[in-house]
Length: 244
Ligand SMILES: Cc1cc2nc3c(=O)[nH]c(=O)nc-3n(C[C@H](O)[C@H](O)[C@H](O)COP(=O)(O)OP(=O)(O)OC[C@H]3O[C@@H](n4cnc5c(N)ncnc54)[C@H](O)[C@@H]3O)c2cc1C
Image (cartoon, rainbow, N blue to C red):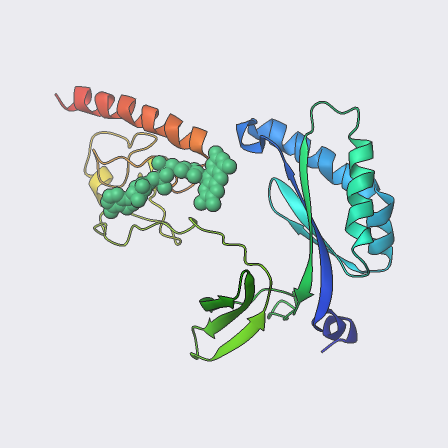
């Protein structure tokens, strides 16, 4: 294993600066890109960021609407970086940022891509602590082996897997289980036998529609899901009118 990677996986204390853009989900996709670009530029221009990057002692984790910056030397690093970012944003009315700092022990791992800090096929089985979290028990779901990891915090990311296994095979899904609609189901047997083309939100079974997060290719946001629900109602009416 390369020496720099080995160093990266040693247990050490990290100081993390979390940043996210306020009201990001209410922006249009174009505006989201503009704001993220702007934030990236401001962060990259900060002296503290540049120092840590030059020393190869910073981990940058994009989170879509912001980022987590992991510093290793001292808690002053993220604090100073946050201060520089605030100063750069002082006169900027468009870009509002939330920032938080957290210090704690980290234990890295290296995956097959030689990337660190991701434990695949691992699930949390138990959490321990007194007044606050101190330790978790992890299980490797491949070999059943369990181990304990001391940690003061757990961040839970939920809601990314669709529950569509119960659907009949006639309703086609993509490789992640999201329901296909529109042109991507035009070759389905039921559509081949039909004189109609599938509507934008119509599945591989004519007359069955999918809207919102469960639909393959949808924008996973509330406003988009509500909009697709409205579109589906209109499409149902079109389908009913065409079949009468
Ligand atoms: C952690 C997290 C943070 C998010 N943050 C934001 C944000 O800041 N801004 C934003 O715009 N969006 C955000 N989203 C995305 C947003 O929540 C979704 O885009 C939105 O809820 C999708 O709406 P939906 O109606 O398509 O699906 P859902 O809200 O998931 O509703 C589907 C419903 O169907 C039910 N259901 C499932 N299977 C069955 C079944 N077989 N029978 C009956 N009922 C069933 C489910 O229980 C659920 O109530 C976030 C999502 C997550 C997970």
